[in-house]
Length: 277
Image 1 (cartoon, one colour):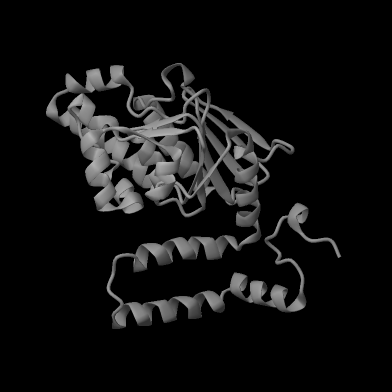
Image 2 (image 1 turned 30 degrees about the vertical axis):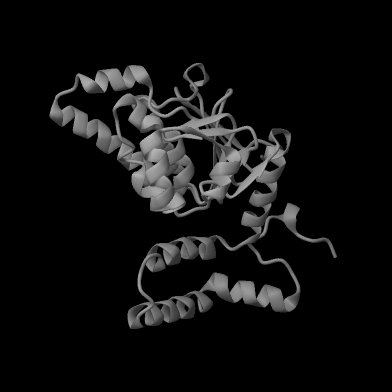
């Protein structure tokens, strides 16, 4: 990930946040428990994501984990406390977790998961919520809830969207571990690389993201949400035509086309990524 001048660092109890070169780098920071969720991490991650989404100076968000693991899912001590909650408290706690996942999934800016080590349970949910996921070759995954007598409920919409119902029927039920190669095969991650090359691969993707138009990326995410799993009917055809017409006439659309015709970088491209004449 970018290692040039740091522009802003913020301290949290369970996270590291570093904003540099217009990228928000968010690292889960509970390495002693493999970055497992507790109520504090859930609340802090939700707040950080909302803040980064509202920050016009941030173009993309990278999510990773400090230490040996990406995220081991829910903290066992937290789950033990939850089991003793009354129905109302239990539901409120589950809703907070669901809100965190929804916030990540619905972020208007590109999100990239950088996965080292283990991604279990809710950690797989975080991966599935990100737009792009890249894992080290030796990373390991599991939807482990059934081994604890639980179900992957709040993460299920995002995981099933990523891997499909057929793969979910296997991995939800067996709770078995699977490799990064298998995660790639079933669509959970987009790319797998040797661990020493992981940061360089993330940097390549961030460079591509920064060259694309930020409003276009926002509109692309809205387009995917509006079109996925819908029949190709008259409403879809009309809606997509209206969408491109509006974007084409927007300031960013006009600037992008003009920059292409003029053979120059568009005005949103960082100076460091512009081709020298």
